[in-house]
Length: 290
Image: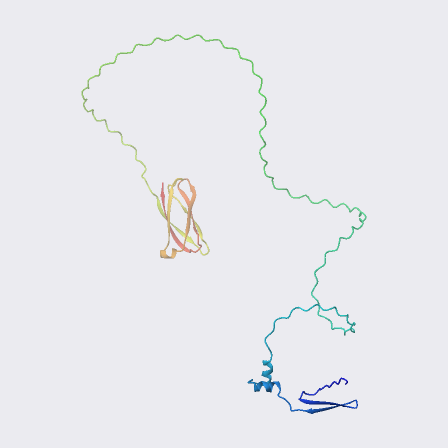
């Protein structure tokens, strides 16, 4: 009996196969049986609840342990060279590369020919006199000179004669203390002396002068005469406006000086308005103290 192979490629179903052999011919009869339950339907009968997709997901078990490393396979044969691919598009500009090292110095060139001598330049103007230099330090002291030769011994003078010693006088005896004398009587009064000449009276000259300051004039000179003034005299001055209130002088500052003394009988007074703010007539009072 020869081997018979039957392939069933449709959806598996229950079939019945009968093989008979008659006169070297094989007859095959296939009878379709009743279709069985699918695995999902069988799961439902056995209590599974859910859709078929959920049942399929339930069939995935837990991750198994990694298997042992397999044996290294043999090197496969080199595959045939593939055809050249299409040319790719232009890539983007790359970043600037690192600067390269400086190249080695080139060899020195040949020395050039000597140039012609230039014309002599004009003499420059004489520079200004420089500042006096700082005085130098004192030089070191020189060495002492050699000691001079010893001079010749002078001639010894003659010895003078000794003078005669005078004799000592005798001490006188101490005299006895004398007794107190009798008090003398008062003498007569002396005659009255002659009357002296009349002296000059002590005077303190005083006076008043008038000073006029015109418009735009802030200095005035007054001459004072018929006085007794010395170079050692002291003169006191006061000044006030004529016919006006003293409040008008609140911001007026005067500088008063005197001089030009002539024959001790006259002198000049100079009055200056420091603030240059006065105008009109002022009264100058003076007192001379000798």
